[in-house]
Amino acid sequence: MLHRVSIAAALIAGVIAGGEVANTAALNSGYRVVAGSEQPSVDVELVLAVDVSYSMDPGELLLQREGYAEAIVSNEFLQALKAGPNRRLALVYVEWSGPNDQKIIVPWRLIDSRESAAAVAAEIAKAPVRMGSRTSISGAINFALPLFDADPYRGLRRVIDVSGDGVNNDGSPPSQMDIDDLDLYYEDCVIGGSGSFMVTIRSRDGFKEAIRTKLVLEVAGGVPRDRIVSVTEREPRISCLIGEAIWAKRSRW
Image 1 (cartoon, rainbow, N blue to C red):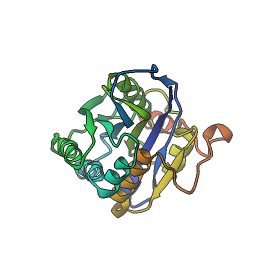
Image 2 (image 1 turned 180 degrees about the vertical axis):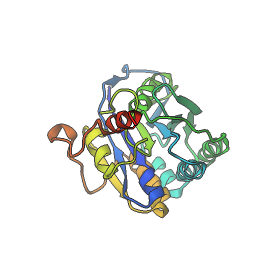
Image 3 (image 1 turned 90 degrees about the vertical axis):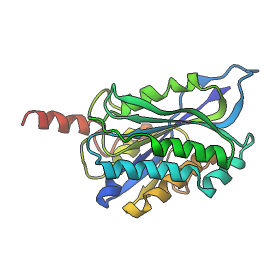
Image 4 (image 1 turned 45 degrees about the vertical axis):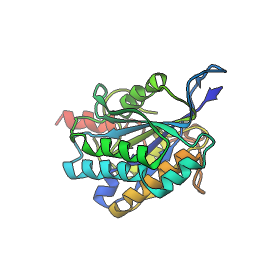
């Protein structure tokens, strides 16, 4: 069975600044599951990969934590979960920063009820808040991909949900520097593949609702009305190496 790995992203910086941010998904990959596997089945294997780079202050980190914890126990999320054929999913919560700075906060957990969702949300909420350094989206994705092999469950779909507040500035390119049109960077340089989409957030107040909407879409396997054209079908509107270039320029000052 061929599995697609969707990569979704919630851009935090624009929310905090009151600017324009986005939620995005998905990138295809070549994971396969052996037919007749006896591993338990879930509808989705979901990696929540959350940015804790130095550009985010404690208040912003807390808002991010609350957004995911509240989304997991929301009625909309649980209704989407129960609409699937297996009526359950597996989830792991990871925090990341630089290319070698990733930490599993909540290991793989099964969510199949309001009670199990609440238990996972509590684990996310109670973990000590930490802050990293640079921003490596590629490092987060590279760390997240092998986690599926350690998942005791096997799903119909696999999703990496990346929460970030800026462009890649360390490690290999993904395809914290503040730039204009951060949503265009993620659209043209991070997401790609069949089913890609973006949900734009235009205010801090809309962040939690956007996270909830995105997670519901990921669990339900849906896409918003406005589709995104794959980066492979057009030239990027913004340099995919802009973060590395800005960092190099600052280092010379």
